Image 1: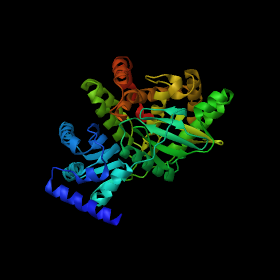
Image 2: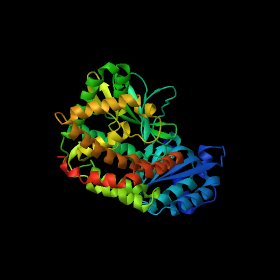
Image 3: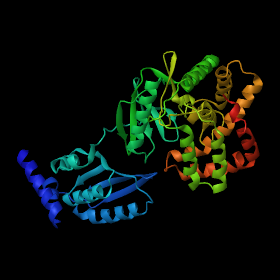
Image 4: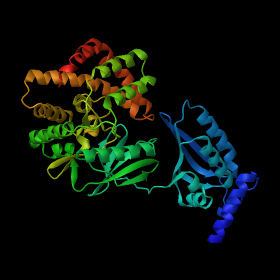
Length: 433
């Protein structure tokens, strides 16, 4: 093995330096020729990912170089470039030269999902010491698994009695998964009752986060199984919100500001709506008071898991800090004002159960409030929910066209025709202490 490593390293160095026309690595590693190579680009606000499917060898590198140059040249800004090699089975010395060119061109460059044979080539040639190269993650199959949650960026499945997995939408980057892990850890330290992922995996072409959760059911499942306990579940749901909103988040950490994130999300969906529509949503966002409370920002009933007699949280990708009306408004948008999709599939229970739960939860959250005040607070949440009904499109650049069109068609009814009402309610936001 030592001699092989030495010969391989020398061969790779020679090939990279001399630009030879023949390929020693191809000869050493494989005798099969496969000229197919497909490259796909995903761009998440400057964080660009190139996925490779096939073999990066002498017969494919020229076309791959041309395709990559064209794809990258079409991007306005590239903050970071990641190459996903999960589906790349082979790399030759000419492929190594292409990788080296990309690494020199982009300061923030890394390779992920490298299969064992390809990783060995990188290791032998010293590439693993020159740049960040990660091995491939283990593959998991969710065929036949129970779906327990579905949201804008992924689907949650139960793998067995002890583990669940969140499968992210195709096109999600490894950075998004790591951000969710960091958010979960930071929120847990602050006191949020949340599960923390212990493994990153692949599910087909998608990434997944695995969680260990013993004997848990979603709040939706609990309600469906025992609807007679609706009042008790609503009380627990309200206490979960109150527990979060009692936590002050110190500024300067990794947990982001909710208002800044909302504004960025609204501006991001400017690709789908005209400037007047975006300006109207921004007026609403700018009226929301600042705050420093811990927010989940997707606390619908499928993201609350009952473990024993206590609720805990999953799906931590949108955790931030701000005013509690944002958290409640976002939940209201799902449970009371869901736009698009089948309600029972997304929320996990009939719409009537959702309305009952929400009304009871509000009474417990604002304990002692008059019916008049509760109605007023619900008006305010309805306005915040209106923003959420559309800015969720910023969670991914790969939503189906049908979902985008549905939102565009609903905008006039939900926003434009209610403009005066929405802006008048915004003026009352300051009375929420």
